[in-house]
Amino acid sequence: MNTSLVNRKETSKLYEKSIKLLGMNLADAKLSKAYMSVAFIALLIGGVLGLLQGLERAGLIQLPYWFNYYQVLTAHGILLVVVLTAFFTIGYFYAGLSHTLGGLLPQVRTMAWIGFWLKVVGLVIAVVPIIMNEATVMYTFYPPMAASPYFYIGLALIVVGIWLCAFGAFISVAKWRKAHPGQHIPIFAFFATGVFILLFFGSIGVTIEVFTLIAWSFGWKPTVNVLLSRTLFWSFGHTLVNIWYLTAVSAWYVVVPKIIGGRRFSDTLTRVVIILLVITNIPGGFHHQIVDPGMSQTLKFLHMFMSISIGFPSLMTAFAMFYVLEKTGRKLGGKGLLGWLKKLPWGDVRFLAPMIAMIAFIPAGAGGIAQTTNQLNQVVHNTLWVVGHFHLTVGTSVILTFFGISYWLIPYISKRRLTPRMNKVGVVQTIIWTLGMLFMSGSMHLVGLLGSPRRTSYTTYGENATALGWDPYLIFLAVGGTLLIIGVLIQVFAVFHMMFFAPKGTTEFPIAEPEVSEEKTPAWTDRWGLWIVIMLIVVSMGYVVPLVDLIVNAPPGSPPFKTW
Ligand code: HEM
Ligand SMILES: [Cu+2]
Image (cartoon, rainbow, N blue to C red):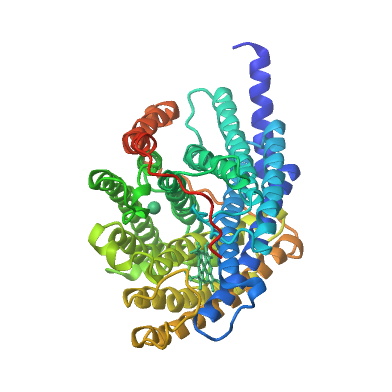
């Protein structure tokens, strides 16, 4: 080995040590703080809009014509499922990359900042037309409803911003591997790699769609292929769902065991779960289009199969989590069949929130399997059941995990501490959120089964008896929404308090160690090049035939419509 290489290795070791002792370097911390701030401001605004919707649906208020139900719904969707989740995910993974890879490279940090501003500017450009009622197309922006071209331009900028962050992550991991030959990618960075691969490859289709819609809404292109657009949208929309899921799962596997004083589940199996989720993910999008015409049963069946196959790594996760929880509970002295449960730190918000999130995923996942089944989908399609479903999946499983993360991540990036008082605030917040979602999502599920449609402002359909029968459920929906807005306010308060006012100090970035007795993780798990190739083959199996068919046998295109 030549001396300069030894020196470089020594310096990097020293640097990694100093990071461990002093916490995150300031420049990286600032980046994550910026991302987190935008995420939680989006939660605040999006939450208030959600409450307005809930109150309107229950017939308790009527939104004015200059800011109507559908404008509010479009903004709620974009702020919560695009802005909150994307900014949180990037802020979280970049903090973790900085921590586990020994600081971000300066060029990567610059890319993430450019990405940040592209997304912020894109968001403003997309939101202004929504406020002007020129883009009341919901966050799914299905044609032939046509928004102002600026809305789509804003979306395109957001995507480019996300791509920059994805490439920044790839560069970070690649450079680290070069500097650490023969070592496994640290588990947290492994999760980040999976997530950013999905973010990049999953958003290619929707970007193509957005560019055709820009040309169409400017009038340069007279018609658009509606079915193709919907298909491209869901190739992304469905992947996005699993990006949130994989992000939450990263905390379940890596962080939760550390917080409860245990060790991680098998390192190899964890990596296999990540690889499986990445490979099987993208071609499941048609389960959002089960009632769409123009594509064959066979294709829908293929996508349904892929959707269900995601259930496999999810069940592995459920097994792994309960294994770790029980093992740790017993190590702490828990006896008997369920005594170990009592030994878990229920009073620690960093555990309580992700724990409830995991429990919520059991009914949430079951509902998802029901929806992806053709016959059952016919019953609930476009009803409030679906809205109940995703408030349970993303609105509870994912978001409560994010909230739980915030109680150590925000102090960590702010060089502050989580006080026992703030922990109590967090516990109260978690309970309020859980109750709120039980009420809101529960009543949405039930009233959906009775036929109440989603995306529809309050109406009794001329005092129709069936529609009147929905009212009691919708009142419960509003009660849940009211609890939730209290939860939003507490959460946003907690985040900014921890960021700027909590006592100074160092907080740990909790990453659990694997079991001591564990066998060595095989080297093949690190072959991301191969996983990407397999992923692309699987994606082609799911998409080449339908896309070619939709393009070659295109139905007549549609001119733009403004239906509102
Ligand atoms: C204060 C908390 C919240 C309340 C009160 C709330 C309430 C609602 C209501 C009443 C609807 C409209 C149902 C319809 O007419 O179809 C809705 C839609 C939606 N919500 Fe929430 N929600 C909240 C939080 C969240 C969170 C945290 C997320 C995701 C992270 C989320 C994601 C969505 C999405 C994606 C839609 C569908 C929009 C569409 O159909 O275009 N919500 N929400
Ligand atoms: Cu899906």
